[in-house]
Image 1 (cartoon, rainbow, N blue to C red):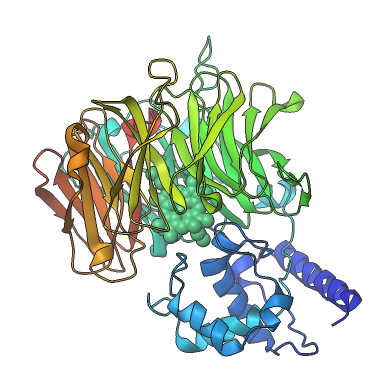
Image 2: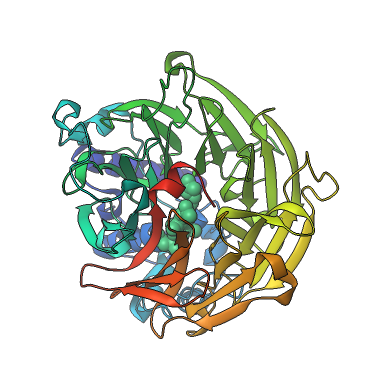
Length: 548
Ligand code: DHE
C-alpha cells in the first residue's frame, strides 16, 4: 500500500469516528469501514468493529491507541505484516514471558478472537476522534444539585473507615462499611471502572472508567449515590482531586482532574458538580530526543498537600508536569524531565517526593515537588509496578520505600530519606523474592507487615498467592500462602486503624478477603452475587491522607 493510500485511509477512519462521536456513540462500539489493501488481510465491517473493541478493551492500555508502545512494545502494521498470522495468533492467545497476558489462557479471548486480532494488527491503527468541552458538557449530568445535598451525614457509618470497591466487569462501584463489613450501596460507574479516589474532605468518592466516564458519589447520603457524572475522555485511567488547604481552605473539594489515555489530554472539573472546566493537551515532545509524540497519555496523578498542584506523569514523553490549579485562566506548569514510559507511583512518607515507575525502562524516577526538580532515577528490576507504593522505617536503613515488579517476582526496597539518611537515599537496599510477577504492595504506619500479590504469575495457584514481609525482619524473606483456589489475588488496602488488610479474589464471582494484619488470620470473607470481579479497593481515610 502506498503512503498516500494509507494517509487517505486513515483520514477516512478519523472522519467516520468523528461522525459517530457526534452521534454519541462510545469509542469501543464504533463501527469503521474496513477496506482491504495489498498483502493485508481483509476484515468485514462487523469483524473490524469487533476487533477494534477487543483492542480497546485488552490491548490499547499497554500498546497505546495509536500502537506506538509503552508498557508493551509498539505494534507497527508493516512489521506485523512480516510475521505469520499463526505466530501472531499464538502470541495473543498464549502471552509472552515478557509479561503480556495470554488472553486465551486467561479465558478472555477465544481462539477465533485471537485469530481476528492477528489480522487486525496487520492493518493500520485507526485514529479515534478528538474530544473538547462541547462533547464533554453534552454528557455532563448533575443528579443531585449541591443545594439539595445533605449538610451532614445521614447514617451512622464511620465515613473514614468506609471502603470503595471496584466491581470491574459490572461497571459498578460498591461502598462497604469497614467496621461491620456490611454492603452500604452500589453505584453505576464507567465501563471497566479503573480507580477510586476520595475528595480532600473524604465526603465524595470519584471513580474513573476505562471509557473516560467520571462519577462522584456523596458518602453523606443515607444510601451513597452518584450525584454527578461526565464523560471527558474516550479512554482513561486516572483521577485525583485538589487537596491543598491553603490559608483559607479555598481548594478543598474544589476541583478534580481526570487523566485521559485518549485523546491525550487532562481535564479539570468542578469538584462539586463535575462540570468540565478546562482541557490541557499533553501532545508534546519526548524528554530525551525532543521528538514530537502524538499520544502522550496521562498515567498517575497525585495531589500535592503542600501546594495547589497536581503532579501528573505523562507516560510516553517521560515528563512529570506540576500543574498549578490556583489560577486556571493563567495556568502555570513546571515540566520536569524524568524517564520514558511513566506508569504508576505515589508519595514518599513525607509527601515531598514523587516516586514513579518508568516501567519499560526498569527504573524508579524521583521528583522533588518542593524544589520542583528532578532528583534521580535508578534501576530496580524488570518493570517496576508499585501502585501507590509502600513507605516504612527500616530498622537498619531508616525511612525506605518499595516496589513490586510486573516482569519478575521481586520486591525492591530503597532509601527515601535524603535529609536524615543521605547515604542510603535512592539506593537499592534490599531485594527479596515474592510469589511471582505482581501488581501491588501495601503497608500502613501502624503495621509491621508489607503485603504483595503475584497477580501476573502465569500458573494458576501462583497467582492466587499472597506474600507478607516483616519490616523488623525483612531478611527472613516472605511468608507466602495460597489465599484462594479460584481467580487471582489482586491489590491490598488497610483499614483506617491499620490492623486489617483487605484483598480481592479477582474473578466473575469475586470475593473480598479481610485479614487480621497481626495474626495473618482471615477475619471475614465478603461474598455476594453483587461482588462481580472486584479489583481495587480504597479506605476513605487512607486515600484522603495518602497513607501507604
Ligand atoms: Fe491499572 C492504577 C493504567 C491494568 C488495576 N493503572 C493505575 C494507574 C494507571 C493504570 C496509569 C495509576 C493511576 C493513578 O495513580 O492516578 N492499568 C493501567 C494500564 O494501562 C494497564 C496496564 C492496562 C489497561 O489496559 O488498563 C492497567 N490495572 C490494570 C489491571 O489489569 C487491573 C489489575 C484491573 C483493571 O482495572 O483492569 C488494574 N490500576 C489498577 C488499580 C490501580 C491502578 C487497582 C490503583 C492502585 C492504587 O492503589 O491506587
